[in-house]
Image (cartoon, rainbow, N blue to C red; front, top):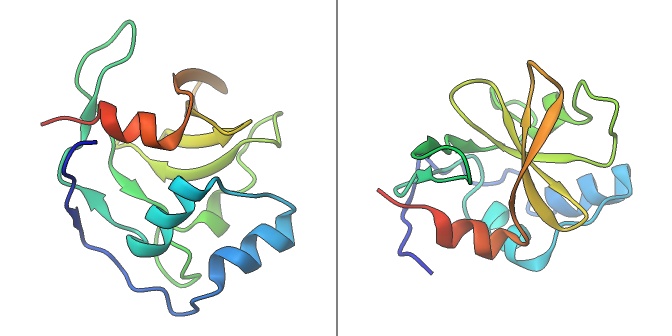
Amino acid sequence: MNDIIWKYVKPLKNANAIDVFEKEHAVSFPTDLREILFKNNGGRPSLKYYDTKTEKDKEFKTLLSFNEEDSETVYKHYPLDSSDKSMIPFASDPAGNYFVLKDNSIYLWKHESDSTIFLASSFSVFLSMLHE
């Protein structure tokens, strides 16, 4: 996996915030994603670009925060304004789209078209796609 440094991390004000969110919404984050969310709440990765099958150098902006008073939180964006309630947003890009977990795979949800693009079969695989 790439050596990613997370910047602008906001310490969790409640160490159980992710557990509480999972219980309240009957969702579950895979271990790899959960660990990154816990350690790097609201952070931005030093390696922020990734490629899809059709586009190069797309940008990953920031993890959503689990501190309710922060400006960009999971609470403000879950559920997404979408017909598919099984998508759990966990990060955003600069264009207002969200990285979502669905069936333990990672997708990019495009807000303008309410459509998704498959990115990776797991969060660890997605992280390995990030580059300078």
